[in-house]
Amino acid sequence: MSGKEEILKTLEPLFIKADKEGLWFHSAYQDMWFTPNELREQQANGRYLWGAVNWELRSPQVKIDELNRCKANIDKQIADILQKI
Image 1 (spheres, rainbow, N blue to C red):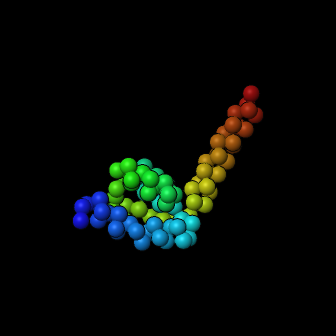
Image 2: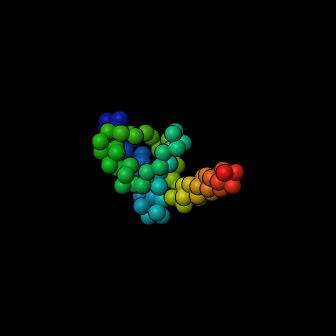
Image 3: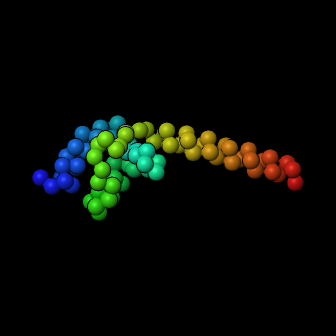
């Protein structure tokens, strides 16, 4: 079995769980998020062929919440600047 095949084999339980529970793949390395289909497509093209230890399944809501916090912070900064004009 090739290295790629071995990696994909170890990831298969994660893909099954992600598909079943609506979870996404997250890698702390560069804070990357992929839907299961996106990661499958990337891996079919030889990218992100990392073992299961490099991936965590997370709800996409975690990323949405993070982005909403960032947006609220930016909105506050804009409001502060506009108030000074």
